[in-house]
Every structure is written in C-alpha cells, then in structure tokens.
Length: 293
Image 1 (cartoon, rainbow, N blue to C red):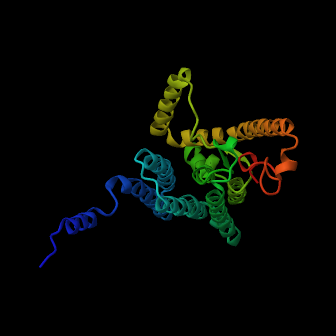
Image 2 (cartoon, rainbow, N blue to C red):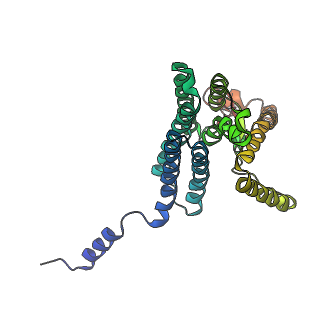
Image 3 (cartoon, rainbow, N blue to C red):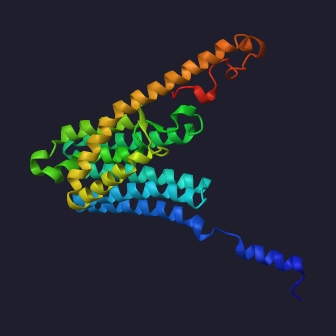
C-alpha cells in the first residue's frame, strides 16, 4: 500500500518542485542565444554575406550584455551560468570573429593568415581565463575598469575593417597584410595590462540623463539607417577612450597609494608590532589596494 503520511506527501511535493524555475533559466537561454547568433554569423561568412556575418556578432554582443544583467535583475546568478557565459564568449568573440576574418581576407596570407586567426582566438581565451581567475582580486578602486579590452569589444574592433569596407566601399578594403597587423594588435589589446572602462557601475548625474538619452536615440537611429558607418564611429570612439581610461585608473591608483601612505604614517609601529597589520603576510599593501598585475 502506498504511503500517505504527511511526511510522505511532503517528500513527493518536494520532489515535484525540485529543479530550475523559468526565472533561473532565462539568463542561460540568453547566453545560448548569443552563441547561436555568433555561429550563424560564421555561416553567413562561409556564404560570403559579410554584412550579415558582422551583424550576427553584434547581436551576440548585445545578448551577452543582457544575460548578466538579466541574471542580477531576476536574482538568478549561478556558477553554472558564469561558466556557460565564459564558454559562450570564447566561441562568440574568439573563434567566430577569427574565422570570419580568415574567410574575408586573412586567407590571402596563406599559413601566416591562419596563424593570425589562431592568435586572435588564443588571446581571447587567455583574456577570459585571466578575467575569471582574477575577478575577486582586483583593487577596490578598479571596480569600473577591465584589465585589457573585454572579449565583446575585442571582437568588434577585430571586425572593424569589414565594417569599414561595408561603410565606405572598395576604397576602404584593407589589404590582407594590413588586416593581419590589425588583428594582431587587437589580440594584444585583449591580453594587455591596459585598464579600460567597463561602464557597468557608472552613475549618471541627473543633469546628464536627457543628453544621454538623446545620444542613445541617435545611436539607435544611426544603427537603423547607416549601421556600418555607426559601427565604425563607435569603434573609433572606443579606441579614443582608452587613453582616458588609463589616466583615470592612474589617478585613482595614486590616490589609493597616498591614502595607504597616510594610514601608514598615522600608525608607524603597526607593521613592527603586528607584522602584517597593514598588509598581507609579506607585509605588502592590502589586497584591496594592490594594483592589477
């Protein structure tokens, strides 16, 4: 006879309700959609539809920006989602852009062109691995910076020559050797130590809200009317912002160093009495104030 005690009914109810809710599935579904979009771009590249190929990677970047925010909004963050996101980024912004560039121009360099495509992919993988391994060791003042160019932005920069050729015609088509040099430069930016803006936690002053909305509207209008020209302009603006991000990071780091020195002057005997009172076991700076290596 089947057990019908209250405890048995509770166990059956728990078994039925165990699993993931739709709320928890949505962010992962967006991540999978980003991967599918990027891989569809690879199919377009094989067919020679370069505009659709670049557009598919752009869509993947938009979806990649949405999945993490959606997970936080829905309170559905998980280790599974984080690992899935990294794997998706490697495919979408490391493998796919490299192959698109190879089919578009780099194959004209023979084996060297294939090596350049591999270089971009490897740089993307190294960049993602470094981000995952150091995400909890960044100094406190670096909350609004990435170390190196992030993977989606790197993919966009790598595909900028194709966007330029679509915007300005045959006159803007770069020779294969120049495309190869550009691709190598983008790969180096991805694995570099340069601090770049992340824009994740930027607080917009109220007085700038209306101008920002106007700029956002103009960008959307540009993408709808002249998508390739707009993408080229956005890429150039992003590159132009890198020197400013480096200066901002240096300013914050100098302020943190001065604060640390001031605290050290106020407590001159703290290190001698406690050994690591002001820093770690090696007597260095606190983890939250160490610069990114």
